[in-house]
Image 1 (cartoon, rainbow, N blue to C red):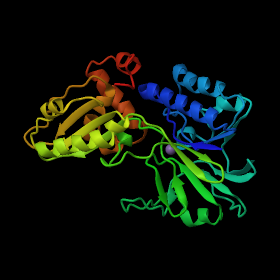
Image 2: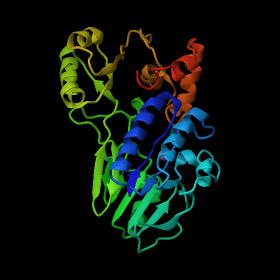
Image 3: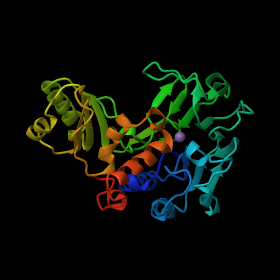
Image 4: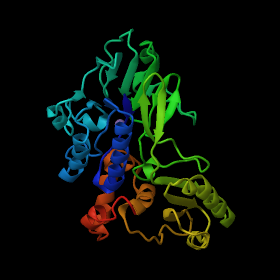
Length: 344
Ligand SMILES: [Mn+2]
């Protein structure tokens, strides 16, 4: 069976999503995959999905009519008590929507599915696999941060399963026996990579007796704090050898409190493989920044820095961003639906 999660289809990065689904189709065909499990958040939008975005998913599904698909409800499908955006999938033969906790037998394995925010009412002791889309209280990240909300970690582990897989957290991470698979590609700077020495593991997993990871090499977002010209140069060298030379294309966001002419340094270094490089100067003298943007993706770091905290998550962020762009006189159609959208 094939496992992946957090597709988050949206027109802003639709070209990247399309490329991912082409890669996924290839993986499915080459490995003769029969069962495909998505662990939640198919669409970025929670209310309405434009037809061109829906079509990308339908084209992919069409190509795999011999497969069984299991769609676990994520928080992006949890408006009121019902799935809104992916309800249409239930009319397609071979597709199962999972809105309530339940055990389903797949390839001889008992799989316990726990959708977003469902009551954790029962604990099947004899299941092989557990799939979730939730916050997990007690889950500890590498940074040391511990989640304080969600389903209790100890309760989940009472299932005594062989593997526990989760969607929802976009950064792949493992704690105890619980594995957040992570999003298969990065949407924008919100999903940025943090390690200049090693790209985040992004892709899909095939589970037979063992778990096999199949990487998807795609555009990456990096945020780097720098305080001197040589910092910038050092970072560029690392990014080149660890990302660009390995086939990744990158968007880089330099953040600094110093006046550094990042543009000249990057120009001299060479821009091959760099999709865009921006610099946010956190100088005290002025709140006004001179920025050059050509897409809404470029603007995200600036918006992120200047908008109030409560808008920094969920849909508010994108909605507010769109409003600001409109005020600035950008044509949203041109920015979001243009030929180059998602691949700039
Ligand atoms: Mn989610």
